[in-house]
Image (tube, rainbow, N blue to C red; front, side, top):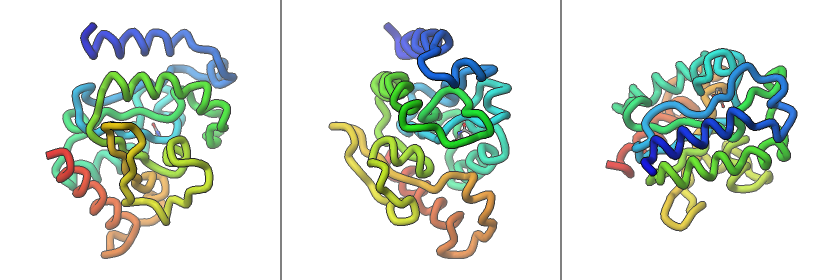
Length: 191
Ligand code: URA
């Protein structure tokens, strides 16, 4: 089966999913955006209101900032990224998804990774990083680090754009500046 067909089938399965309570309150599943043939697979936390309304990940304020940072570093989210989240449905009030919700949704994420076969996984924010690196991590201590989470796929960690929305400075050493350095390294790694 073609990659696109496999992902479409998975998306249809996800549409039918009511394994956790988020299935009862969602308007849309938020499965993915970008290029299934991309070398970079980015995993965010969970859909927010804009994502739930449209079915597209990272489309609200945080998403617009993420898109801008990606473009500032000479990449596009349409071509260079496959974008998804740890859970595919919006948690009420934008709360952090629980470990149980993440676990019940993880198979969809693992199948996405297996099908896309990226060269690098970008764990965007603490919730995403914790899913693969354990709950003890501190995002400010591990962002910019590189890990082997699967045999042939490297992973790295960046700040979540919601955090960057609260930190406007672009000065050297600031979270936005560090994120751009991280994105440049990711770009170099895949080119
Ligand atoms: N924040 C996320 O982590 N994911 C989205 O899709 C939108 C906002």
